[in-house]
Image 1 (cartoon, rainbow, N blue to C red):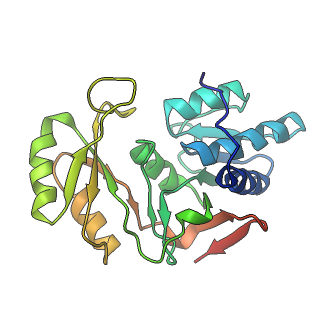
Image 2 (cartoon, rainbow, N blue to C red):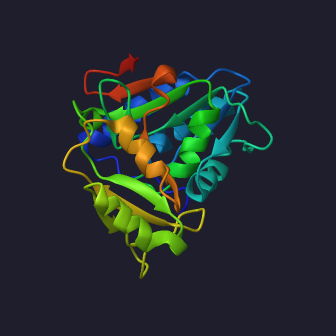
Length: 236
């Protein structure tokens, strides 16, 4: 079901909930906000739904069909980047966050739309549990690639030392298809010592729509870290 809640039985889920609720409380009346994709953002949306019932007036720009469906179940009013190309805030999750506020995103395969929304937002609020905070970015970097250019992009990523793997679907035969109709390559690297440089190289490969390194938004990024002893807020 689009509106079904994720399980909440683990400490990590509790920390995600605390962080998501905290981020929702940062939203002010009249704002137009970006709504990210993934389980942590779900908790922010859940809290926003309650605040809307209490009188909060906002509009949300969803970054995926999944988020759109959940927002409709929660009765969060929706709009688009066409109507509001400048947003007050975006709330999203991350796969990894380093001390400089650089991110790896894209486990939910919505990285391109998430990057568009992040660029449009005056403030980017990233909601994570403590396990996502790392000293150095090291996780697989998702890359959205048009199917026509799949093999050339694979060769290009291998040429710079990466190990790309085509992401396959769950409960579906074949590759994951993004909301934009493209494939996802999950690319491992021996190290990511220069995230900005790697982001630039990947993004300039013909056929690549976007990559999951988010390095250009550090100045406007606020990270809300859910912890057992309460949320911690980090900024640049």
